[in-house]
Amino acid sequence: MTKLKYFIKLARVNQYTKNLFIFLPAFFNLQLYDYSIFKNSILSFISFSFVASSIYILNDVIDVNEDVLHPEKKNRPIASGRIKVTEAYVFSSILLLLGLLVAFVISSNVLILICSYLALNFAYSMGLKKIAIVDIVIVSTGFVLRLFVGSYSTNISLSHWIIIMTFLLSIFLALAKRRDDLIIYRDSKIKMRKSMEAYNLKFIDSALVISSSIVILAYILWSISEDVVIKFNTSYLYVSSIFVFLGIMRYLQITFVEEKSGNPSKILLTDFFLIITIILWILFFTFIKLF
Image 1: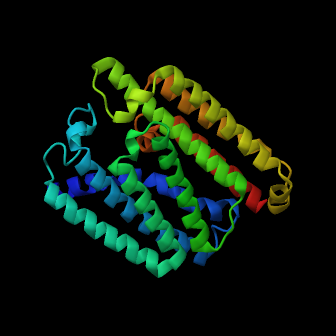
Image 2: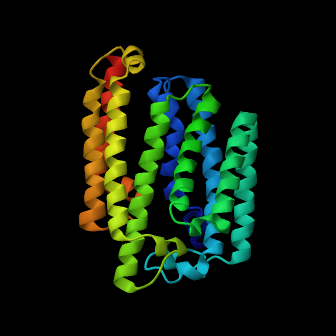
């Protein structure tokens, strides 16, 4: 049972919150309540999660020497020695095969997209993560691919605004994570990744402010666009931007004031303010749908 716990931790199940972006096409198209669409979204979520876990495991194997120096990552199963490298490779292969099999069952387009995500992350692990700016762009592209997986699995077209917002929001989250690495380097003189040489706090802070501002602006423009007003049958959708603003401001507070932005998934699962804000945002859309 103890070993199973470490395998679950190795798969980084807590990171599956990122894969909820797969549900956004159906959510924004007000079709998440349709059984067949919801079923395909769930299957895509499972497929993507398994493949992502296989990549996380590969990254842990590659980064084990760096992880043992990190104040938190040193407790990961491979870095701590609780899971052997050979066991990690076998587990990663099983998850990858299961994920690709589910993707194949959904559709060939979903399989191609997930294979593209796999190839992109393999290139990232093999060296692209060492190139500043390119590293965060690749991470953000992964979130956009999640959107397209959700789109192709449900045959729901994507709005260009949703793509832009997702890309910029993921850029924002990736920058916040890099800032946390810089804080660790400042305090401990331990460099978490090669790309840190091309970053500093002034650059990261400026980029965070710019990206967060554009995310909020893009959301407002989406909410007042003509096709969205017609689809939702209301001109008051822009009111929901207050929740987006609150969420972004809280994350900036976590990043700049508390300096604890190293694990976005953990923040989204544990920060009470963000959880309540997201729930209120979802309830607002539910209200719009029903009334």
